[in-house]
Image (tube, rainbow, N blue to C red; front, side):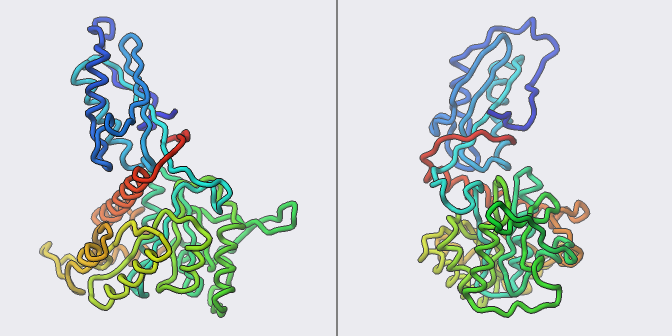
Amino acid sequence: MSNLNGSTNGTHTASDDSATPLNPNAIRSALENVLDPDLQQTLGALGAIHNVEFEVNTVRVYLILYAPLHFAAERINNACKDAVQRIAPQARVEILVQEKMPERPQNRPLANVKHLIAVASGKGGVGKSTIAANLAAALARKGAVVGLIDADIHGPSVPTMFDLEEEELRGTKNEQGQFIGHPMEKYGVKLVSMGFVMARDQAAIMRGPMQAGYLNTFIEQIEWGALDFLIFDLPPGTGDIQLTMAQRVPLTGAVIVTTPQNLALADVRRGISMFNRVNIPTLGVIENMSYYVLPDGSRDYIFGQGGGEKIAKEMNAPFLGEVPLNINIRKGGDDGMPVVMNDHAPLQQRAIMELAEKLASEVRRRSAAGAQAPTVQISI
């Protein structure tokens, strides 16, 4: 088991020798009433408290919690410590955790990836690739091990968005003579793109089966290693790449990116319907370019207001939030640094981090709804 907040230190007082005896029953009861912030159930109701050990003036709590925990860990850790220290303020508290995952067949593609998420859009021009790149970087910034597949064969943008335009896909041959590619890595994200295969100005002229073949190569012949998340930046629409994904990859779910205007929203309906037909859950809708912040702080809803939230409600999908229209986001894509990595753009950075947190929360909720799981050890 690993410490929930990544450290090995609990809370200390100046004098443990003068401590009053711990009350195990009261401490267990307090821990059982701690609320999981994503699942909105208590740790007791979730059966999450595996064990509580008492040693002199130390309380050591062992939890089993649904994955992923990169955003929820700190809140659960602090809530458990607060619950114990309200009863025993002098106690040293250690919270250790195992991560619970739904049971999955091990012979599936990408068996070492915990969560596979498609980022899609019904139409082009809504900023889907910008959102995919920033979600991947945001998850990596929280400590997750993340990969990003640029599956938009005709319009690969990952090389530009991560300032890797001059790079080429490298690899080695295995014992069977098969090429095994090694992903690029930047900002903590492992990256593969058609842009690393083609010359910079070369057009990708190929029919559907060939496009699907390239995607299969990215899935089966890239040495991804163990990942917490693998994000797929899909091409717009509902074509061969999307169908190949549905058939070949056991996706955790899909995120749909839109802008507020009605023209984009009609395509969202089609996109969500397609994923529903192939039994891939929609993890949420993100509305990009939602508004522009004027110099006086007010918002100008250039493309309309509230369309993304409305369509999410209509399609019974979670609404993950809005991303403003802002020059820092555009510059981040052009300059090769996702805005979530730019500490000089705190408002835009926070907006993306909140989207990533809501996405992780939705994955946890779905994991809890379907988990019948052995536990696996993790480090947070």
